[in-house]
Length: 222
Image (cartoon, rainbow, N blue to C red; front, side, top):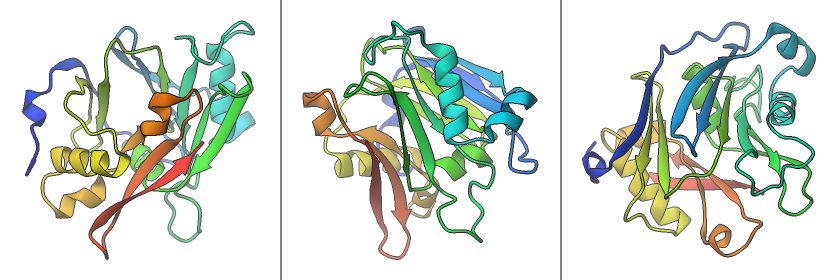
């Protein structure tokens, strides 16, 4: 860490894992986080689910279906937001393989909504050993979920004193979690901007580092 004050952030939960090996596009593991209970767990992906739904959006819709009922509203703690990878995620020979599929119940329709968004988050998640990230519950305060794929650790930390502007926020967090300027390219940040603070329907931002311009950029899913 070359700037920032990460050491001042209170850790609410921590979980250690062994980075999984990607075999034929899959790790067969999903990372589950419950923000109401500050719990972090590893869950497996059944081979039958893999064969039936392939990955990406299919995984997201299936696991959302398992988590909610016909009575679940978009703002209920039972609702999940799921970030999914596909089996060719991160393969540089094909364009678009870095896409993250985002699945949740929509505040606009009350039914399933899925989007895909560019950036580096999905490849980083896959190379850390996870096929998807499943977040459920409501945090009691603003929090940061930090996944360290190199050290094999996931932490939930209090988020205090952060800027609500998307670009300023991503710069702050990149400085906080990167080891140096060059390491910023290994950081991808998921956030929501000011619009999400003032309306029910917001945008998910996923950052990536532009090495040529030495600047953080963001792409949106909404």
